[in-house]
Amino acid sequence: MACQDPTTLNMNRLMMLMLACAGIAGENAGMAQSNAPSARFRLITLDPGHFHAALVQKFMYPDVDPLVRVYAPAGDDLQEHLQRVARFNTRPDHPTEWREQVYAGPDFLEKMLAEKAGNVVVLAGNNARRTGYILRSVQAGLNVLADKPMVIIPAELPRLRQAFAAAASNHVLLSDIMTERYEITTVLQRDLSQRPAVFGELVKGSANDPAIIMESVHYFSKVVAGTPLKRPAWAFDVRQQGEGIVDVSTHLVDLVQWAAFPDRPLSPTDASVTDARRWNTPISRQQFEQVTGLNNFPGFLQNDVKDGVLQVCANGEFTWRLRDVYAKVSVVWDFQPPPGGNDTFQSIMRGTRSRLVIRQGAEQEFKPVLYVEKTSGTEDQALAAAVAAAIGDLQAKYPGIGVQMEGKTWRVTVPDQYDVGHEAHFSQVTGNYLKCLRDGRLPDWEVPNMLTKYATIMQAYELSRQSNAPPAMKPD
Image (cartoon, rainbow, N blue to C red):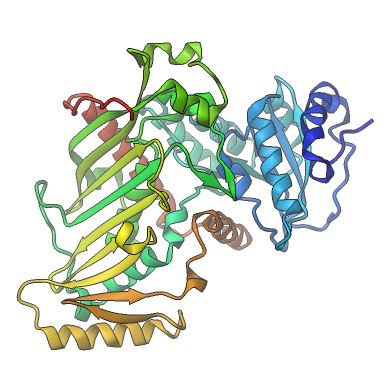
C-alpha cells in the first residue's frame, strides 16, 4: 500500500508512518496523485533539517500544488519537519491543506533527481550539504529556493558560482531566502535613506567608524510556531551548520548591500574585508539536552568540548569596504533570551542630515522600532518638516504609519498589521520568488549581488582565522 498523508494523522502515529514510508516509499513514490493537476508550481522539499523548510509552508499559495514531495533520509530531522507541517494543517486559525508525500531512503537525492516530481526545490537543512544540493538540482533543470547560507567554507564558493552559471544555462531561478528585507522597519529605513531631505547622503565612514552598523542576536533555545524548538545535534557543529560569521551574517550583509546600493548590481571586486574575528558560545550538557533531547554530546562534537562544556563558534563580526562605504556586521548567539525577549536586530545608517536607527531591546519591548536622529548641524525645523512629509508620502503605501517626537528623536510608529513577525516573512519571500518564476526572471541585480554577498562573507571567514578573539565565558 502507499504511504498515507502524514498531515491527516494523529501525531502519535507519525513516527510509525515514517518508518513504514522509509521501507516502501521507493516502490510507491509515484502512486499519490495531485489534487491540483493544473497547479503551476509543485514543491520538492529536499533533506529538511531546519525549521525554515517548514516555514515556507506556513501558508498556502494560489498556484502551488498542495501535494509536496519530500525526499530525505529517515530520522529525527524528517520527523520534526513533518510534525511542523502537520501543526500548520491542524491549527484552528487559517489551517493549511498541505499533503506530504515522503520518500525516505539513503538514495533520496538520486531518487529526487530521477523523478523530478516537482519544479521548485526548497532547501533548508544541514548547511554543509547545501551547495552540493543546489548544484545538482539546477543542473537537473530544477528551480531552487534555498535557505541561507548557500556556502559555509571558501572551498565551496567555486561550486556556488558553477551553480549560478548552470541555473542561467538551464533557464531556472536560484535564489536564497532573505527574510529580513520584508521586516517593516528595515523596509522603512531603506526608503527613508533614499530621501535626501530626511537623510542627506550616506556618509562614507571608515574602518574605525563605519557608515552602517548592524547586529543580530540569536538564541539556541526559542519558540517557533508556538512550540519550543528542538534543534538537531548537528546544528551545534560548525562543520555542518557553519560558523556564525558565515551564517546569520548572510542576512546582515544582504541588508547592507540592499540598503546602501538599492537595485544596483555589485561585484565581488567591490568588497574588501578589513577586519574580522570570531568567538565561542559555551553550551553546558544540560542546555544541550534541553534543546536537542540528547543527554550527551555526540562523537562528532567531542573535539569541541572543553572541561565538559561545548564551545560553539557561533559568533563573529567583520568590517568591510563596499565600493566607497564602510560597514560592520556582528552576529551573537546566546543560549536563551531574557523574559519576554526573542532574537533581536539593531541597525544604524549614518547620513549627512540624520541617522536612521533600528532598536529592538527591552525599552522597545523586544520589537524593532525605527528612529530618525538629527545629526550635528542639521536644522531642527527643516528636518521635522522633511520627516513629516516623508511619512505622509509613505502613508499612501502603508496606511496608519506615523511619527512622534521622543526628546530630540523622531520615532516611526507602525500599526500592528505590518508587524507580521519573522515566521510570516518566509511566506513573503516565497510569494515574491513565485512571482519571479511567473515573470521568468530575477531582478538584474539579484544574482551578482548574491555572488558578491557570499564572496564577502568568505573573505571574512578567512580573515577571522588571523585575528584573536576574547575567551569564551562559562555558561550560567
